[in-house]
Amino acid sequence: MNPSYIKFVAEVLSGSGVAPCCVIGFPLGACTPEAKANEASDAAVNGAKEVDMVVNVGAIKSNDWALVKRDIEGVVDAVRGRAIVKVIIETCLLTDEEKVKACTVSKLAGAHFVKTSTGFSTGGATVADVKLMRQTVGDSMGVKASGGIKDYKTALAMIEAGASRLGTSSGAEIVSASESQTSSSCIHCGLCDKACPTGCVTIVKNAY
Image (tube, rainbow, N blue to C red):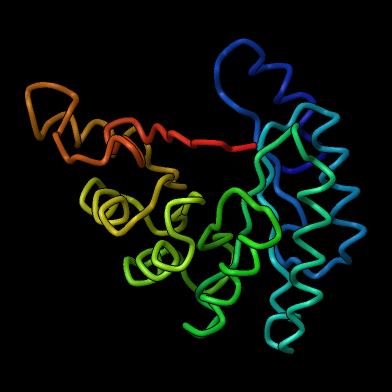
């Protein structure tokens, strides 16, 4: 959700169990660390329980990892104890080495998730990228696969690759397809500690 709508959305979702999520520095991630921190703090004040910030891709390409870390730390500090922070690294624009470094820096900066894509660039989530991200951050962070997940088969492949959450506009169709695979909603995939593919329910341990 864009920042201008988050207060309204938080009010509508109050008591529903659905966490309002706000994007920060979206979709290019090109604003200053201070601007992102202020935007994130404002979002939390207005009811956001999660924030999805876009990493500074230009800083990554310039090999300015100190700026990348400061950028993420600013948002983490701004919403500490109030919201989960997901860092969108825009995998389609990065080399594998840059993806690993971006995930590592996100972890060091205190983010809770790394996320593949904004949906505004040249590509979305791939199984290879999700595997690489999971291998890099281990079990201490969430990995969100987002972009291009339009069917049950793709959703399950992302979860098997290590995704603990999915970003998709086809959630209802995916859940419906998953239920058709078995007489019950459980497909016995053994991924309960990561995410439920039948409902995309994420269990985030020690999120704060």
